[in-house]
Length: 377
Ligand SMILES: [Zn+2]
Image (cartoon, rainbow, N blue to C red; front, side, top):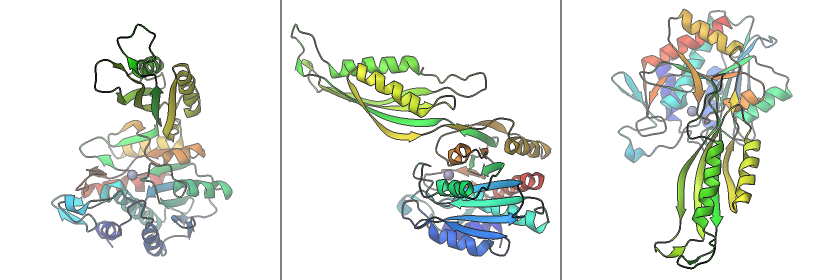
């Protein structure tokens, strides 16, 4: 089977997240990997994850390669191609998930199988962890968190993990060593309606909200600052504000706003929530936490990063070390003290959009990079 054939087979299985049908793809991979794996384990009750162990099961020299098998939904009517039937057009392959991230999974599996066939896995253990339910905000109780729990309970201590999420096209490959956390906060201010011409103190919902927001902005400057370690600071952006009526002469009694707060790996979500809560009480504003994802970041000295960099440099590849958005599963591993990078994926376009596609040749490139890291691990 070629890499394109495997990709075609994976794309054909509609593993749209939330339909709870990722299991079909897990069972497919179980059969596909059986001839090569030292052991295969399915985790989870209703929604499954797959762990495939390659090489020496007793080795403490462990590298995890993780990828999610679910995809975001595709509206067939809006696509130029059938999203669940891989289409080749010139140098590009189209289909839902080709980039995010079935392509990265194909390169990972081909790299592992090749390393196994070339006898490179005698002194190490490579674990492929294919998980479900990532696309619902990378905060799933059924997906990677189940994988990490299994590692903890079974005393499996990988020294590193790579998640080959896709890179953009025509960009230097990015190695993400962490992500800022995310807090989505909805704030609501209740005031007292009155005629705005009255000589009387006002309880103006919009003014209360503005004072709250002004103080919040003082703490989280508009531009995220970078500290001396190159870690971006926390930032708060107001993304929506609503309030008042349509007439000139009524003091409004209601105002709502949305705040997108990105949390630096130097800060903790809980501390920030406490701070925002204190501020809200002071200004008579009620807050509701809509989304809460912790930040995560690894040290620059971790083996998974230094090995990857030395492999890329030996291959003459340019790269950039940075931070990703909080929407991937790396924080689960990092929280469990498994140093994780998001890197070495395929080059993709229109991820999460119509006509998602990859540069076909990037499948091979991604495979070569992953193979080198496995070899040097
Ligand atoms: Zn993804």
